[in-house]
Length: 251
Image 1 (cartoon, rainbow, N blue to C red):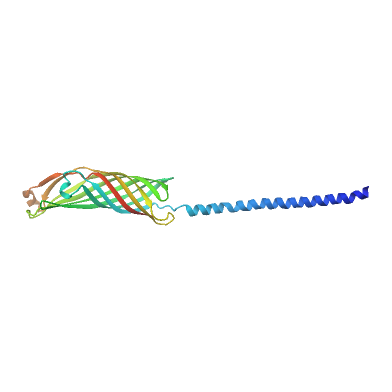
Image 2 (image 1 turned 120 degrees about the horizontal axis):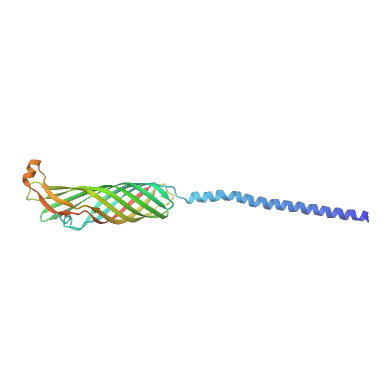
């Protein structure tokens, strides 16, 4: 009995060693596979994130035009309608970001003129606005944003009347504080990944300025000007609704 049991025991032990070795190799193979895949996953995610996140572009330069509606008798001699158009130049710096909200500020300069003829008299009005624009932006998408803007400014200019019956023209100056408040939207027309962004912007708001007395004096020397007298028209109220459209570059 002892002689017959040794080959059987030896076979059982051999088979058990083979099965144990096979199971050990399989476990090591399965364990090493997921670990290698896990090690490769973070770099892939980082590459995708870097490719889709646009670079920050805090500086903006915008060039466009502004059309204001001046209603009042003081503006009638200078235009056949109530529209006053100015070229508009603005620069800004986005100095504070909070998620999708950004606060920006920068200088604003606008200048324009209007001309009209009434009963043989030529009337010319020029106005310039220099101020500081402060805006809050909301960007729901890399290609779109909405904004509200407040711009205190100083409004200055001059008005001139040329009457053929007079040897010289009549002139008066305009100078006053002004304040704009507006809201608008902007859309990006090139890829967000580009180093320079190209935007089209549009906004509407209300611009306020104090009414200015239009008292014209002849363009003469000081001594002669007092003798010639003055000509008074209705007060000019350079305030009302306005629309502004521009093309902007961000970088």
